[in-house]
Length: 434
Ligand SMILES: [Zn+2]
Image (cartoon, rainbow, N blue to C red):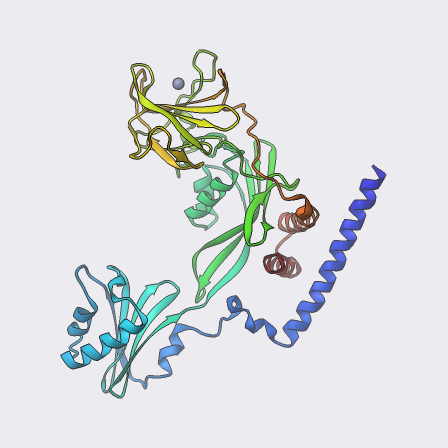
C-alpha cells in the first residue's frame, strides 16, 4: 500500500515536471515563431489569395459543376477556348493531374479578366484544387493543396434521446456517433444498452479547411457512462507507428467478440431498437434474438473461419463461424448470405457475412445470435469476452502516465486556455515521440 502511494506521488511529480519543462520549451518555441514550421498550424495561406495575386481586377467569376459526360476538353470548349489553346492546356494539366479523375458534381470556378480567360479552378476534394492559369497567353496548371488545420475539441453530452440525436443536438455531425459506437461497441451495445442520462466526453481531432469544418480525425480519448458503468479509453502508440485503444489499466478495448453483430444504427427514435422484442437467453433457445429491419447487415462478431452455411426448417438460412479457444458463433434466419462466405473462408471481426431476414421458424425479421463453447451454449449478453493484446509491458508505465494526464485534462474544466494548450501539446508530443 505504502509503496503504491510513493509510486503514485512520484508519477504525479514526474508528470508535473514534465509538463513544466514542456511548457517552457513551447513558450520559447512560440517566442521564436518556430510554430509556423508545423504544417497543421499554417493558416495564412488561403486559396483566395493564391490566384488573386496573379490576376488584375476587375474580373468576373462563374461557379459551375461538372455534369455527367463532361471531359476537360468539353469544359474548355464550353468556355470558348480555341482548339490550339485547348491542346496546350490539356498538355499542361495531364502533367499534374489525371483528367479521368474529374468527378461529376465537383465544382469549378472560371474567372475572366479584361483580356479573356484568367483562370479555372477545379476542386479535386476539400483540401486540394487544380488551378489552370492564363498569364498573358501562357497557360500553366498546378495542383494546389489547401492546408488542413487540426484542432482538438472536447465534446460532452448527456443522452436524452438516442445517441445520434444527442450528437446532432450538440451541433456535431452524425459521423461522431459512428466513431463512438465503433470505439465502445465491445463494451456497450449502442442499439440496446443506451439509457437516458448516460453521458459521454470525447477528446477528438476536428479538421478544418479555411475555417470550415471538413471532418473528424482521431478520437484521442473518450469516456462513456452507461447505466452507471464508467468506461474510459485512450488512443496510444503501443508499437512504433501502431496505434490502438486501451482502457486506463492498459487492457485493450478490442475484445474477442463484439457485443452485438448488428451495426450501430442511426435511429432517431428514443433508444432505437429496444422496442423490438428481445427474447431472453434460455438453454433451449440457445441464443439471443435481435430485432432489426430486414436487410440489415450482420457482422461476424470475432475473427474466425466459416464452419458451416446452409438452410434448415428451424434455423432458416444460417451461418456458423468457428473461433479460437473452441468457440463458435451462430447466426440464424438470414435473408441472405454475403457472396463469398463459404466453408473454410477466414473472416475478420466486423466483416459483413449476411443480412437480417425472417427465414425458418421466425415471426418477423430478426437475428438469432448464439455463442457456443465446446458443446455448451453461453449467453452472449453475459459473456465476458477476453480482451485482445494489452499495452506491452515496457510501454505500460508511459501509457499510464499519458492516460492519467489526458483523461484528467479531458474530464476536468477544459475550457481554460491552459488546459487546451496542455491537451494540444501533450497529444502532439505523444504522436511525435512514439
Ligand atoms: Zn432466437
